[in-house]
Image (cartoon, rainbow, N blue to C red; front, top):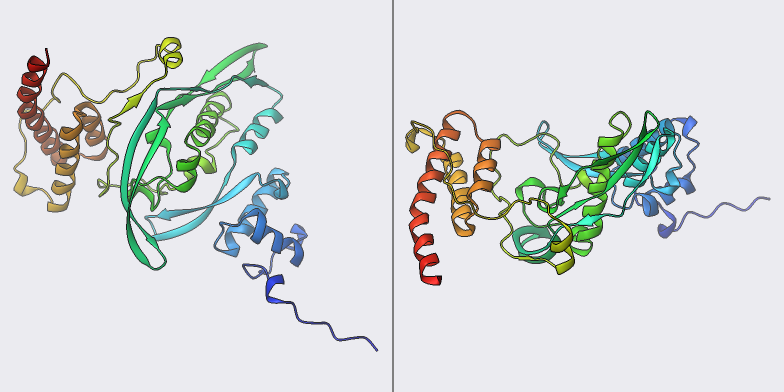
Length: 333
């Protein structure tokens, strides 16, 4: 007489229940448990993991080697987070190698070390907490990738800046870096720089990676975010970095005011929330003398009457600040 099977212990149950899937995936309960608990521990839904399985099957990749990652991203179209699948940097490099034209890469080159404090609010244990993190990070990184073009070994290099690439807690409406970007500021930036150069060398094969898409919004925001990233205010460069690299890098501050439009709209005619966001950007630019960066940011985010008001207000703020700066410089001399 056969003994009745014992029910599975709670510890043997997968973190996410196994759904009904395509038999062609050859998915077993034990494999599903490994996928949910070990391969994709950050995944929140079964759909995200199944999507990763289909991606690997279509690309002939071994899912157990973790070539892809399930990344939760906020979608403005539906107003909530959705799980997406993006390749890791190793998978993009593997794709490039499969072309037969991959010709290696150089060691990463890093810019000067910067230090900056980030502030924001995060939801932990059911309540909102105010946090402040101070992070030291390289200002930029570049990795040269080589491809054989017409029998010639050609270099492709795309520099990537830390402040433009880092992943944020809470998406685009927060300026706090994620834990990984705090623990590995050089390593995460290097992955993004390598991915950018791989896309330049192999545009028909390479795509964006999980490291680049983490903390991003699927659709671009139409309005300015409540929290904006301010320019770096403290730079510490090692002698070797400044001696070997002659690159022109963005600096905080500008000697010329932002070009203002010939006529600016009345502030009262603008949306109050938009006007408040613009004023915050200008206030931060004044605190750090980051006029050029603020102008570029406003031009990218504003249009029409909003842009006209923003540039006029930025020009007035810089003109009011400039005399104080000149006086301080004369006193220092």
